[in-house]
Length: 177
Image (tube, rainbow, N blue to C red; front, side, top):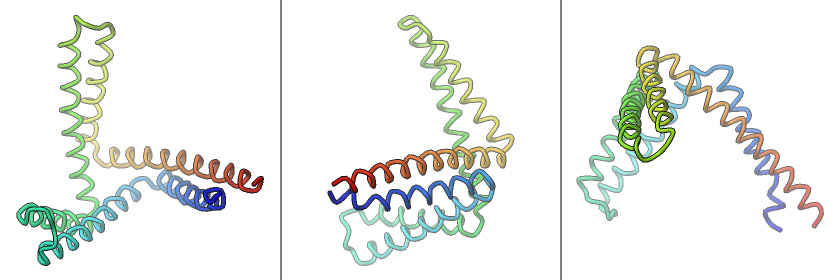
């Protein structure tokens, strides 16, 4: 079985994810800035590739949309690479705005369906909690960035541990074949 012989790839991905998770937990603010910087580098690459596609004319996408995408990718990417902390704050404010809208929507939904279901107050409560999170992100942006990095770090630790576990299980399976 081919996948059984590739068990070490899963273990390697798991070790990398665990390492990233530990770094995220130890230094969440630096992790948040590094992630925005990495997104910036990817956006610049996307913008350049899209620009080449626009110039070459080898795209089935409208030239106007491709130009808009290319320019917006380049603009975001350059800003994120040059000033990742500021861009992280901007992205956090956009997240806060989205959370605010989502919270209001949940409360409105709970009010609207209150006659049809029981426990609608839980939906309204989740809306209030989401609004509170949005307010906290706006009031304390650095703490918000650190919190997001910590959650990502915890997710990476869990993902890494599962990858290692599956990789070792596959190794045992492959040795039995």
